[in-house]
Amino acid sequence: MRKELITPNDQAEKSSRWLDLENLAKVELSSEDPRHPIEAALTPGTGDGWLASQLGPQTIRIVFDTPQFVRQIYLEFREEKASRTQEFLLRWSPDPGQSYREIVRQQYNFNPPGTTTEREEYQVNLTGVSVIELQLVPDLGGAEVLASLARLLIA
Image (cartoon, rainbow, N blue to C red; front, side):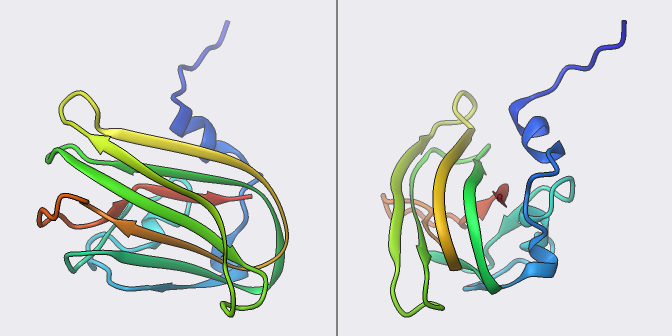
């Protein structure tokens, strides 16, 4: 018998249901560490995620070339060094950024070495999506921590 142990992250990345964002959209972002580019968070199976190059709140915007039907959004965040409380806002626009509708706003506590990963998967039914935007506040306590994103997948 053949078997393979998988983690939730492996299962999410191996799925072929995710949109090919490289060919369907452009990405706008507030900052980027060249050693940890956004492609590492948006393309399954590549790199260890995106890292901001500047402190403070950050924005990642996926701007689709043509409006899309979106049924699922997968987010993964990792923090293995600092204890912190992060907040994120995930929203979408039907009219190329003229107005936005909130999907979720959430806070999460990282407390390494115990709590280092946050995974969220949202089942949505969004028609005519022009923009998906993720706003990150890396530490509500005001500590000097860079925002990061391990994975963002859209189906």
